[in-house]
Length: 453
Image (tube, rainbow, N blue to C red):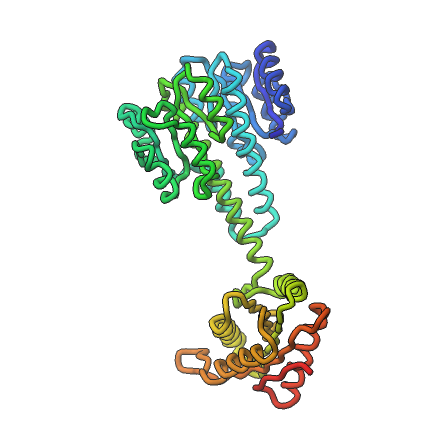
């Protein structure tokens, strides 16, 4: 995955080594030699990840990180802080300043590529979310994104280990902030992972009773866990299996002995990424629903009807099956609005939609295509069967009054026009003939059903 990486280090040799490694993986690298230069370039050059050394002239890495996270244009850029190998205090200060993750010197290639790859994906997801929010696709989406990107909520973690000491150590590091469910039995991992709504799965590669890599592979195959981040815990000597785990689909790893601050950073980054992805998918689903659904009645809208009617017509011609279309509208609806108000009219339209949907088969499509006009696509039904459906709908509307207030119910009727698809006919022709049938009902006095021709 390509991305633009800002390497901030006044040590030319160390920075050159990082730059060479990143460019070998086809990342675009931007260089800064001071905190001030880093702040300017991060704001101006479309940076995806900042790799930030702690020790620099002028403002140090901690202050640079704080300023990056405080500035609106750069606060969502993940920061990967480079610290000394044994500088536990530096890691604590890095977390306090807003760093998203850590690298220790000397920087190992596997660690660098794993962290950068994860963070670039994280940044791309954030960018997509913020782009949709800026476009105003959904009301109130901006605040939800703001809370996720710049805040940390508790997460639910599945810990897969048969070692009591490892379980106690990880659970203690998570403290009260996250809920940790442990699964020690390898045979129960997949059922537990599928049943729980987990934000992260931590897998101990040193499982005694099973192949941890096979479990990772199976987790990636299950629909319920395919997109849940996996964090591996392993020993430094087990590099071969670690690389295999990353190839299978694990998102990150942690080496023993476990540093609690490093674990907290890894967990925070992966849970954030999972939540961003969930929000992105949820936003896409709701956006598609808005594009194809009538907001008042929750039925399909005209755009959705046109698309699905065209598909139904093509299928009917291909398979030689009948297809019928019903158009109906509310009789004297303007009179209803004028007498009882538009709020009452909306209540009636919603109730009509509900009664119509309840009277149809799952395969049928009911859509609102105008103010008080509706359409129903009936695959597999000929004209006689469609006429029976139309008559049933008409009676259901006319026989039960519509309540528009606690002390007021009114009678509402509908006019129904029906057309059955002819050989070779296009959707437009079918719609036109059903509309002509509807018009004939309205001309003859309404509250009736008529079929085309």
